[in-house]
Length: 329
Image 1 (cartoon, rainbow, N blue to C red):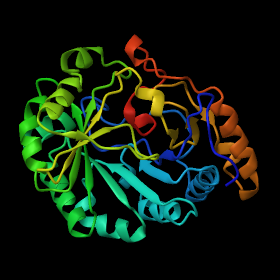
Image 2 (image 1 turned 90 degrees about the horizontal axis):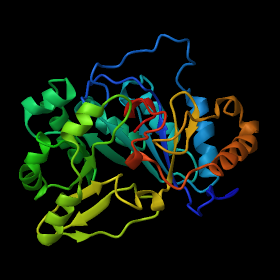
Image 3 (image 1 turned 135 degrees about the horizontal axis):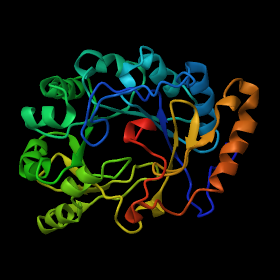
């Protein structure tokens, strides 16, 4: 290992979120309510397989052992399976995860597993098909559910399900969600709605804190699970009567950023120190040859000296992030 990526607050970074596209085919109300729209500029293309290999290798040489492939919707890339294979074959990387809307899983998940995909997160914001359509803009509920079942059939020991918590919509389905995971190896991760871009009205109408869910879980015998070094930000709860688990992601809670262990590289090759940070640090010019690795590492390390102690969501500042799909959530 060349060195361990570390910021000025002694936080070490074991976890890379790598976006491979900002294109998405869903129209989720909290992210892309009008659907994906190219900005019309002549921006560079998405990072290529060789560039992906180089940046992942650099991170692996500096202590990163987990990579999550994100988007947009990452499986829209025609070379998605090759991307998984490239990341999985990088020495030092032992966890290769993805976050997906799940619409292609039933058909392709076995192939992805064979390529080296070890963990899957699926966005599923409702257990009601009509409400799912309302939130996502796509009538794909049954396709996504079939994909989750297929993933378990081909050998995944646990699937993580991401649910953006929306007051007066899916927040009322908590009992149904609990019943669903009673005998299924699913970790349900309830994510607080986060304000990005111009979504003030949606946020004001539908934001709800996860604290009430946490209090309910604790009152009903759920226990906090110990956190591993390369785990994401969820507080995970387990219960002896449930095969499934519950995760809560509460970015507005004090101290949320104290255990930050992840960095982001966008689909255009920029380093983002925080989901709600600035416009990003250009890395792509140093992803063009293997001989540039030490320069690439040095630029990332220098960038980390500017990582802030926390985001500023509580002050209403979501940084330069227009929507979650733009840098991979």
